[in-house]
Amino acid sequence: MPTTAYQKLSSGFYNRPDVLTIARELLGKIIVTKFDGELTAARIVETEAYAGVTDKASHAYGGRRTARTEVMYHEAGRAYVYLCYGIHQLFNIVTNKVDVPHAILIRGAEPITGVPVMLRRTGKKVADFTLTRGPGNVSKALGITVGHTGESLLEDAFYLASDGFVPAKEDILTTPRIGVDYAGADALLPYRFIIRNNKYVSGKPVKK
Image (cartoon, rainbow, N blue to C red; front, side, top):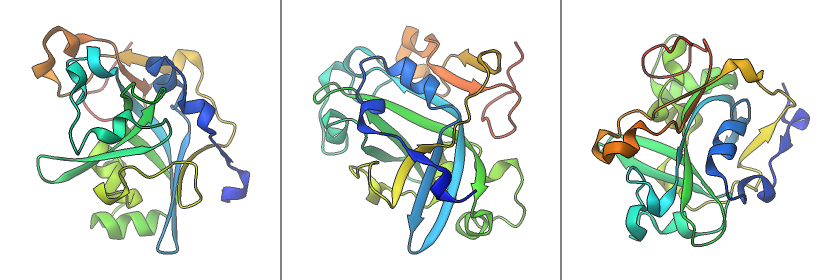
């Protein structure tokens, strides 16, 4: 589908107080990148919300501010990309108002446009479910790196959009987040949102 059919998400979409609502509403939205003249796009099928200073799983828990996390305190609608295990570059979206460090991790997406480019970037030979399953693969396939951290998602080279698709309410499932056991009780919070039965959703299959 040509990007002319996409409606770019406005700053108002990101600048809202309820990070859980935004994380849920991101399901079905499209990440578009136009880097070095190469267009790629993928539909979001899995997100995780991080609720800032009160959330033990958040990089900003307790008001922590570092060179890496400072972007989380900036205005909504910016990219926060960090390196995990020194290998995976994970793409998050900053939400809420300035100085409220909410963020949403994109964990899974379904390819729409530019699959040959995604295959080259990831080094994969077959466009199966592993291409954009898991947050590291999403970033790699779409060309998103830590160099994009702090960039506005309101520009033309890197943005989120809608093509009118909205998942049915019964197809959206809520689960605890993955890989945040260090957060104690907060690890069990139902802050992960997925589209039911989508093969690009990471982790073990969820049946509800």
